Image (cartoon, protein in one colour):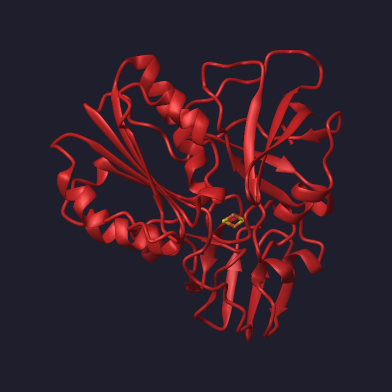
Length: 316
Ligand code: FES
């Protein structure tokens, strides 16, 4: 990893199933700066890389704060984060990366968050407050106990009515995403981070808006990974040919063969495993490439995508 070594300064329970982690620089040097919406990759044991949005004010240089939801179907990262790290532990991290940037000049920014999807919006609200710009936030959770950062949101909410909490399991209504989008004034920018159903509703509601006003971040895949197998993959640089068997992803096959490949989310979201394709037609299952990029078939996410042709040739 090319980023800083971090020292875990404290853990804090933020809500039912949600813990936050405050990291400082292990050597005391200022941390690399970040912008609102950025994430860091943490290097976990077993080669796992996990991306977490930075929650704290981007003006801060002395710490990174992330929050982790204890996912029922954890693929290792969230379960490890919830059980192992203790204050004083060191952990390697990548430098902050921003795939979900804030457009800072909008007259109004409208945030729609579901569950742990609140995390990037805390940093965005802090940044907009610093700029003196308006924002509004709809925050949907299953119950009040699952609502993290309520006090922080109250402190950030300078108008007193900028945060609307929707406890969907307590007879309160789900946010009406279509109505929220319709009510957004011209020129406002809209952001959504949450579960797939919420993102689909958001995408559908924003269909008529200029794409540059619409921003979303996923934290779980919208499609199953391709595991049907039954194709060969040729590695152009080494000349090796591997057979991808049923039940395995292409990434599993590459890792089992000792091919060094960078990956993080394993779900087609982060783009870390993007691999150039020289021949063949991938079965794209990711949420990272655009439709145009998928149609061009010049790259694929090997963590989740497969092949529509009997052979793929990759530039690795
Ligand atoms: S590892 Fe994240 S897209 Fe493949």
